[in-house]
Image (cartoon, rainbow, N blue to C red; front, side, top):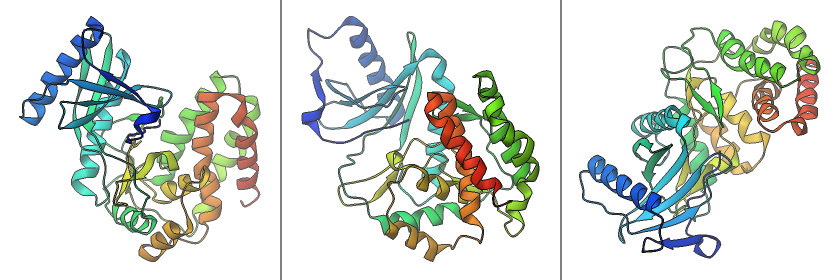
Length: 316
């Protein structure tokens, strides 16, 4: 899921709420005005909105009363739990971590749609990569007793299980890889992925002989599109697929699609060096995300899935 919360107004459609606005949207804006007022304990009435990019899943808007702005994502009626869990994750990250995230305001239903309201952040700055690396390492040092989280959530639009589990390999096999492989089989990729089920997963403990991870607070979907900066360079991360797990999974994801520079990795390494064997585990962890993309977007990710599998097996 991608969020763009910027002030590049020439690329956005700006709309004022006036006589031309449909009755549906008038009702929506009235409802949201009431909910924002209720949850912020301050009177707020939307008088303008701007449509912004919400990725492939949701519509997204910046709303304003002329002085204060909020960011809103609107989705289908079956997405209430997704927005609820996003709000809970952002709240937990905001309370416990040092890295900036959008502050959740409220979530709910309106007619046949659901929504989440967050503070609006002007993400127009050039990210301070050193600060991002340091702050991510600090966030990863926040730990839990078990792997997982109190809520299941989503990775993109795919359900993501987070049942609390004491052993990391059990969690990764049963809560991450197994559901994706079941979904891939339903999508017709079962035969092509037999190697993962038959050879990789039964031997994955070989990748962890010198690595015993603790449950770290994770973003869970940390690719370049989910990190940005305020005007002063302050790093901001958003759209989490939150849980507690091996910190290496976040770092692996940053390398899957790029977008993070050498200063970020150097700062992270200085704050908390990665263990030996990370390069191979990186491919193993990214297999989860590539499988998810295969299930979401189809054949274009099959070759990459097979390639990653073969590369990991070559090191077992």
